[in-house]
Image (cartoon, rainbow, N blue to C red; front, side, top):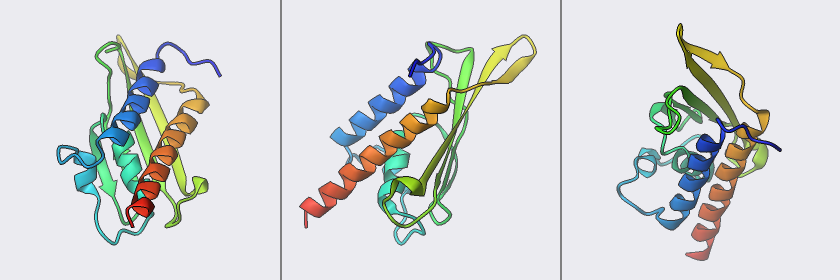
Length: 146
């Protein structure tokens, strides 16, 4: 897989957020952890992992009962002429890879304003993998504490 230089900052931020989430998942300052609701309609590990992985992006819509997370546009300060948006859907109450679907959107700033751009298909898979890895970490931590 070859990443374009424009996608590297986004993936770097996602991976860094995932690593940091693993180090401080009990932090009260995390907006992601505070949005989780009890008795939600989707897998709670996938829900929390999704919020923690995308915590660097502003949230536009969150629905823990429907399993929908929609971020607002995020622009990396190093590359201000492009921005990204993510939609994450949690489709099941079980912790399974096929219970998660991520979609990434990209826009570039032109003289006419923001215009849609292509995103490497592997980007969404890498974000899904980061979420699944974090969800497994959360699950293992819960099982170990019991």
